Image (cartoon, rainbow, N blue to C red; front, side, top):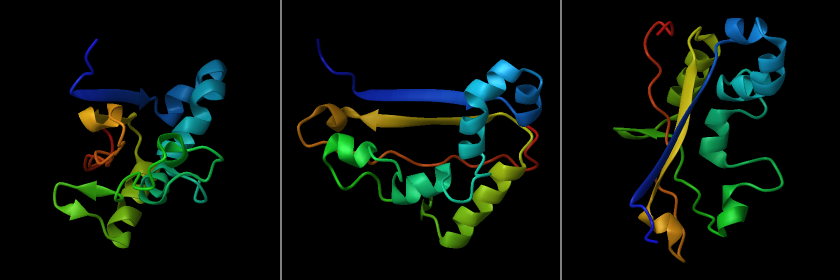
Length: 129
């Protein structure tokens, strides 16, 4: 079986109001929502993409490649500290669902593993989309 050229996985997390209405969903997804919404200032999604995991095993350990990614970027290149701060603020204030995911190109399946495709999409203005 041949390897796919690109693997893309996209997920979403309900907004806080929807999670609060269902204790089982809050229990299962509440911590993830706080991680992706950057409500946890010590360990959150933007910092993970920028610096790597604080957990014992992360992508770098799994792949054996210290070049997990080059950091948080958009179409114009790497984001500044102020731009990352702005994204964290928008994510923490949004009332919408949060979409997250990743893409991996064909080199992920090769011996020399690299992961250049990790980035963050722009949060819509107003955060109510």
